[in-house]
Length: 369
Image (cartoon, rainbow, N blue to C red; front, side):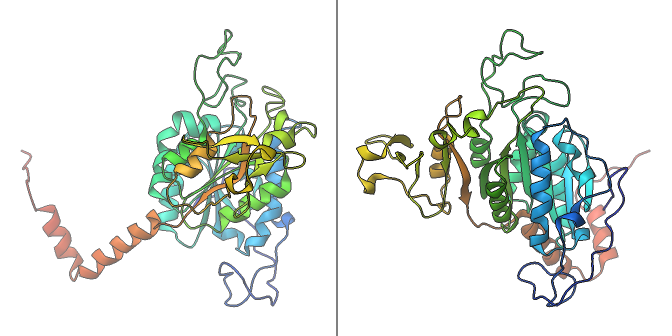
């Protein structure tokens, strides 16, 4: 495991207090670490544009990390390339600032080979969905034990304002002066199509909601995919104002809560129902339907079709945008399956050198003259 360039390795954790651990092993049986947000702040100067939504996400993650009760040397942040990918520099944990789009692949190797680590991937809409698209979907379909945070600002920020795979149709940028002709990805739909076992969405400026989603993702075994709407105030300022401004957010945001009817609006005046005789989901006025028609959110539905229907509710203008956990199901992780195969194979080998020689000489062989 490598340290990030230019950053000091994590300092030794502060003295553990005599408090029973409720989660991960702290390194001392029956004792949990007492850490604070300050312990997760590195000595590196944070260098994002003033007002960037990344600051809010960083602060929320640093404040949330102590809850895990995991020593910092057992936490790793892996990133690709982009504004969001500076994240590992600012976390006083181990980390890797890796290759453009390849963070999920590198994190997969780390997670499989080191089951004692909690591995987080920090990426952006360009890094993850353009050059890194295949790496992302294969990590999700394999259900690798990773926590993947995708910062979505609908623009390329690091390279100064070109349109990204999530930019809306017709988006005018430096690279699309006449407007983008590309239809954007819906990251939630993409993750669900890849059979991700945990899929969620949250917003940079809603710290309570963000930390609640992070908490749920951290406790999930397998791939946990979290899309975070993040404002780029330099190249795409106000992209998510509809979901943030007090006079519009209640009518636009659909807050998903497991086991609760899906209603929203200032006084719950809107709801989500199954269309009569049709497929998918639609928004109706609550007063116009029977309470029994209102969909009760269930994040544990095995088939992804329900969560996928939820992900298709938002229009391009972000009206009717669900946030929260769309799907949380249990299935074997790639890590566990691979390690089981290795252990079973190793148990059958009695003479490793002879087995290796036999393997090399088996099947077709060629003599090079």
